[in-house]
Length: 523
Ligand SMILES: CC(=O)SCCNC(=O)CCNC(=O)[C@H](O)C(C)(C)COP(=O)(O)OP(=O)(O)OC[C@H]1O[C@@H](n2cnc3c(N)ncnc32)[C@H](O)[C@@H]1OP(=O)(O)O
Ligand SMILES: CC(C)C(=O)C(=O)O
Ligand SMILES: [Mg+2]
Image (cartoon, rainbow, N blue to C red; front, side, top):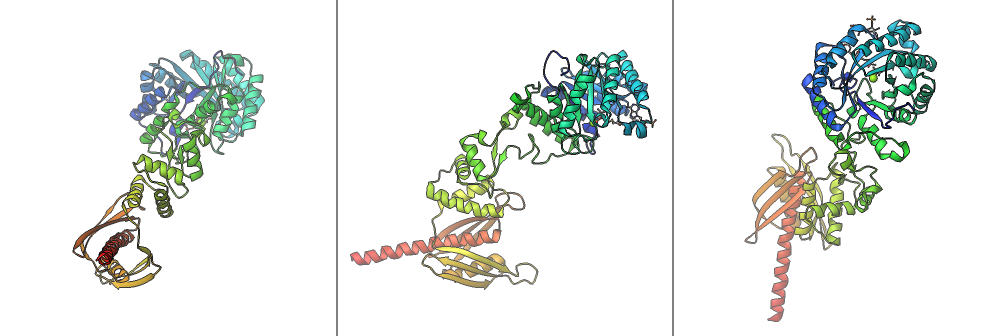
């Protein structure tokens, strides 16, 4: 391990520099300032604000952040070239705490083809770059670009020269995301044993995600002595991105006994910072992204939801509150069970007894088979159906519509209904419109003629698979009846609403008939 007195992992955030190198993520100076403020609140140790020599705008952004940031150190990147270093120094001039970050590649492939330098020339350029930077700034970081594909012995020599020239942070980038954890960790161990003067410096890791191992590699580096991790919010960065800051921080925190070293980040700011970056760049994160993705604390399956309701630690290794997410979510869908359904219904104010819950559950499952997600409004509709509606005698088994579309269309509907006395009746009818045809077919099948007074449909929920509600007002036997039903298919909802009314009419008739029969018996 490098010789530093305080043992914690410094979080070097490079969202505004390497993160901005992510295609589609470039930011204006005001936007960078917004993110820099969020990073300060988050409590990162270093904000890499940009590459001052890249453009006047980059210079202005680094300068603005240097002027404003109090707390985190502000870094600016520079090649081992006089102009780059002087531009970085000028932009950092107003900083309370600045850092010039100089770099040069050390792998043979970069030396031969990109820089066209010998190993000795690159070593000299590194030392000269650090020395020049030190003339402007006490805090100088040196990065050996493509370190993970460099000859370790040569790399140790370059780092030794950088320390001698005054660098106090040595960064070991896995520039092309080629490393694997065991190998990358071993490189840190090797460097801590072979770099001369290493006790004066902090070793830093900087990983790219080309093979999806940026975070694993960073953690392997920490295990082998790295005390600075370079990373970005949401893992944005060149190509497949950089190691995700939120994942590193929460891995170190959640597995604290394993790693034995933590960060100073205020983890409750992780989610808000992530959202701010999405708002600024317009670059969304995947729903299943660890820590800050929409699904990171959402549980959909019944067995998990049941466990969560008993004790959240059954299925959550972190508390959502710790990362700034308000609460875990039990998403009701086709894999959910009774425990989650009854819990949500209780939250919505419906206390169903066991049999009502069983019926609501059956309704819920058949709805969930049709919809991706069942929303609160869907549940309210289900609960109202269960608590407010009487059952039978008719049940709609099937509904088919034909010829409902087009100017000359003659809509026809066929329905199949089951009666509680065991009959199954099938009928068809045509109508002026599909609803008219459905109603005519149902009247025929049930043998109950009704007069439609009012018919209304409306969307209860949003989205392609929204729930629609149908309401009917019917006149029959000199009385008014109202029916209501909900379905993802508005024609089905219309049919169900009418069946509900017809059931009520029949029940009333049956009640009157039995009352009449007992009066006769008494007489
Ligand atoms: C791994 C990384 O993330 S590295 C950082 C990447 N970030 C950036 O590139 C920032 C944005 N870049 C830019 O705006 C431009 O590339 C500039 C302004 C920096 C340079 O532009 P140009 O002068 O036109 O050079 P260009 O980009 O075409 O080529 C890079 C030059 O820098 C040289 N170079 C590359 N790295 C280094 C280094 N660390 N030290 C010294 N020279 C370097 C290359 O050999 C090449 O030199 P050459 O033109 O003599 O062949
Ligand atoms: C400039 C360095 C630190 C870099 O971004 C890389 O090598 O990936
Ligand atoms: Mg990088």
